Image (spheres, rainbow, N blue to C red):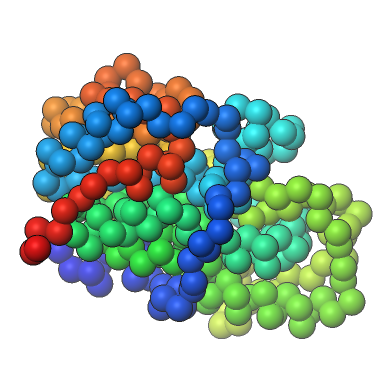
Length: 319
């Protein structure tokens, strides 16, 4: 058995209780950042239904494609992803650590984008996976996203592989605070600073010019005066060995793997698909566009997560 207290990067971390009272949007999905695709084919629905029905301990990995229907863009989607719309790239870990001006630029953009980014709500796909967990179908969920939407939906058997933007920690002493609390510190330090945002990125960042961020003040750690960083794995950094080992253990307990909304281009997530293949677990992929797993997956479906997953029936074993 594993202890919830030892879960590294899971939803029980600081701030999870703040999400329990969040309402879930019942409006139509926001498709501005969703690539065009056809409605689910009935045969595809049947195949995924058979896959899920045959799974007793389902391991699910999600990516940015599951959150695009909540209005959050991804990086790689054709025509609508960040890389397709702009030449902008996310900050690198080494740049953030070594450069005070890079941290100033990052936090200024994040400060402007936070009210909108933190207001995004789970969509139908997040809710379905939460329900599968409650019904005992989903053994463990690993999300590569940092948006907290699975936690807001109520998922608990979950690892946030790349962390969560709703938490901030000190690189020197390790002290953690909520991102919402840091927003108040930003406001106090920058009472007259204003900037108009142009566009939004998958991590809540917005587009600002160097001139706009020049006078933005960044607070230091309240305990030791150290550098504050969002509790996320930036590009160029690595996921902790403890967290990787923990996820491998959950995968070893599973009998099948479902990838939802990810092209699996990043190795930190791809390694678990390789491990599933080595264990000869059946793998299903639900993603608009090609993925790194297409050549060895048991099933590949090209549909919106929020459109296809709700069509799958999972029975309550107690009824």
